[in-house]
Length: 336
Image 1 (cartoon, helix red, strand yellow):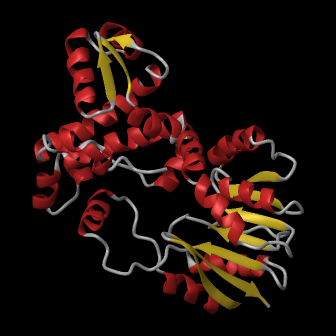
Image 2 (tube, rainbow, N blue to C red; image 1 turned 90 degrees about the vertical axis):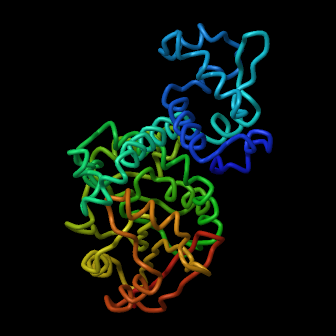
């Protein structure tokens, strides 16, 4: 999925957007997503009043809001009727599922709330959570405690990672292996792609209870129940035996203790696979660094060298880094 970067807007629109307008424009797009405006308009031409009734916007706000989306090039207006522009249809409908729309727009609205108190947070020496007097729990806690959040998060990740999963399935040769444990595998998107690529392979996703409930519905939808299963568990409390491949893909920090448990559970000749972004050719862009450090509730992930050293010190051999594509890589190691 491509991001809606400013270069996808017309030059005429860009010429009229200053920094203040850009903030309002960005927030308006999030509001439109949360209200499902583009989905309500898909295949239709509706008046402002009809759109307002469908999404719950009061009359005095509806037409000005829709006209602002017209200005941005996301809607078209003809004789008082609104419809999606080709850009909105492609970006918000074709490239994204409704699960991704709901989850992404909800998370973005939380980020905007945090950004609204930026000066207070930076001058106080604390962070935005303290300024707002609220807690924003890290993902792993929400996955254990909030079934709705876990369900939306899991379904959204399946859609956002499908292209990476297809690439991984082409690049990772599992022809000599038979049973894959996808540790913290979430939506199962990687496992599903891998078992489709290798007809003899079966997979199991190890994750929290609410995640597994959502993943089961995805597996049924993809008609893979006979080859992909789920197992409720916590990787920090134990790694089950009976698998000759263990994969840790895009799950953040992996404690060395977990790698040791994986090594112990694997049979001789077993394979471990870790996701790893390629090392950047230059320093992290300042905007990415600032936003991560200001908004994030979890530390940055481990580097390539950290992960390779962790595998080596726990007994894995033939540890190698494989660059798959720009922004995507993996580390493999064998138990001997």
